[in-house]
Image (cartoon, rainbow, N blue to C red; front, side):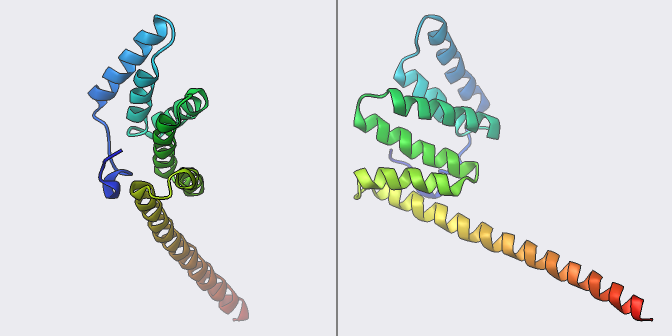
Length: 153
């Protein structure tokens, strides 16, 4: 899991690379059951793609968490689930996944850094959201003031 945490939420996959992962996954599905490795590679590619692909990647990663008998790969799946949920702006769920991971690995620097990055995005978007709401309230207030002023005349 060594990666630049600052850019992980913005990382995009090359469509041709995603197609390679999809072909490998579908080929293994036709032959029986896909390997956990192939399934993970496909899911990891999906979460770096479009919103609908990210949603499919989340579904696959959640399934991997349920099926995986070993703890180490599960931790990777949970980490990537937090990334995928953050990319879909489901920040509370992303942080919940990180909290599960940090409960098992309190020393996990990447998970702590990702959590801080997500919290920063939440605050930034919250302030932007508050500014939009505040601007809307000022606009509505201005319109109401104009209506009342016109009614007095």
